[in-house]
Length: 346
Image 1 (tube, rainbow, N blue to C red):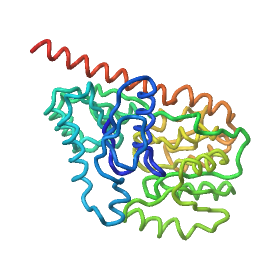
Image 2 (image 1 turned 90 degrees about the horizontal axis):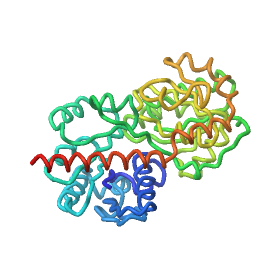
Image 3 (image 1 turned 90 degrees about the vertical axis):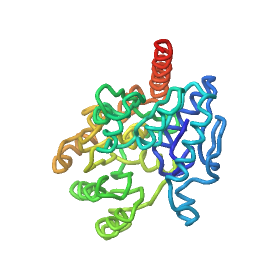
Image 4 (image 1 turned 180 degrees about the vertical axis):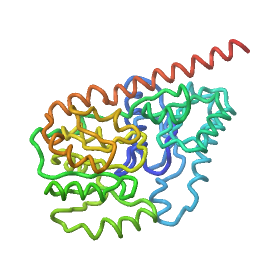
């Protein structure tokens, strides 16, 4: 298992990819598979941990000890490939940039692409077609390439305590960025006469400037509260006590993990239907979605009226991490079988 090195496994606050790697790794170990995790020294895992660097890169780079992430990521990939013969499958979660290196080893490789597919990514797919890839939604997988399978992200529903009484405020959880759009979340709450609680943080200079200009002036500690980045316990409290999660994105969302985390708390989702949203939110059951931001306010009353018990039960049937693990085990079997057929032809 080869995750990004930005955050430890599991992540302390932000880190959706790292959380998925954690859930997948722990369940594979529980089922009796021998798993090695190539990660940071501050990770916690039941698998065998191969330490690539002592500390996660977010903290290391914040302390100015390191400057170039790719140096460490390249080192991780080099170490994995050097020991490729020790494993049945190499499962990379680091992004498309490292796909070409998978052609250098005979061990079956699978690359899970967790991000939006760019022109660069599609060039790699065209030029290195023999490497197995998967997406995290049908929409995103289709952008990566024709025939690319999708395995939905999963949630540990046991780690989210639901609340079935309607909350008193709206919640926004995500990066403080134009793409995630906390500004329109605030506008929707204001239009409905409801309070809103914002959680998350800016992660780049551009996002910091956006937050300072567009969001910070609106925070008054009452109608608009900002609680910053949250750990798991804080996230659960935020989501379970909310009347709804507002997800007014302005980009093609590859999956949107926070949506199923809200559902795990019984909290319905009001979202803009870009990217994978229409796959994740079942309209009239777990929330509502619309194509334009201006249409969301009219859907808020119906969203608040959904049965929160049904929201959780329906979401658990679709997005349990057990289903995610089953999906990846099937893909592992497929790439191993494809490799065996290749050997047989040779």
